[in-house]
Length: 309
Ligand SMILES: NC(=O)c1ccc[n+]([C@@H]2O[C@H](COP(=O)([O-])OP(=O)(O)OC[C@H]3O[C@@H](n4cnc5c(N)ncnc54)[C@H](OP(=O)(O)O)[C@@H]3O)[C@@H](O)[C@H]2O)c1
Image (cartoon, rainbow, N blue to C red):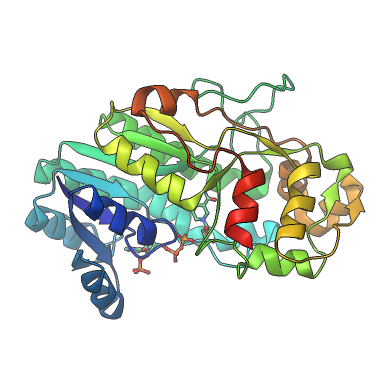
């Protein structure tokens, strides 16, 4: 298949290019920079230099590329995440999820691409306290802290734009592994070594992780699977009281501190405290069943040791 990959130089895009090529696809990799275009060419992709927020230029670029599939992996998330600064730090990512998605879907449709895939997240389900990992039909947040409201709206808009176009939404868990914040040289590891990754209120929040290569493998599988919404997460949702100490150990940090929720609210804001205390995990049953995909790193317990050493 001819695959137009928007975000080919990003955290997941870099892992996806060689896997798409290995699977026999032709890859047209988009970047805004001439320098990164050379590295895409060296990796075996055909570079396309374009800005996703320039609708006319993107329309021309996709039309010329004549892709059969368009994959949207565009984000602009700062390496150093500060949950108190989400509104400021996610301005561009939110634009890429709204305007960028509309531009890309319109360009894909005008070029006659049969398949559209886009990146979303598996960590915005409304907590229900059941202890059961969330499936794709479960409701998303009903009431989100103000700091996260615009970003949450952008995620929902991306999903509805892609869904209405008959495309596939990949709700990835939290990435870990090479090139992500959760790598030995990543920003979260640096934060843990500064002892700024505490266990909040007994560590009741639950996260779902995915190794970046498993996320890329699921994306390749989704290119030929039925369109729909898929959680792309590992098999074992991870309570913060368990994954934070394991992460600290894997990256050579000292044991994490324990703090009450009000301290986390002061340090990390209401949204930061929410993800540490009330977040709930997601289920990968649908992706396994419909895409025939199985994560190689079945659980973060083994994955952290392997990827963060
Ligand atoms: N589920 C998750 O946990 C998750 C999801 C996403 C990101 N992250 C994390 O966030 C951090 C940063 O990752 P990232 O992938 O957002 O950043 P990144 O590594 O800088 O990649 C962003 C990609 O989007 C492209 N891009 C951005 N704006 C564009 C525009 N206007 N037009 C065209 N292309 C544009 C970039 O292309 P050029 O710069 O080459 O133009 C690049 O390919 C990493 O630690 C990553 O793990 C986590």
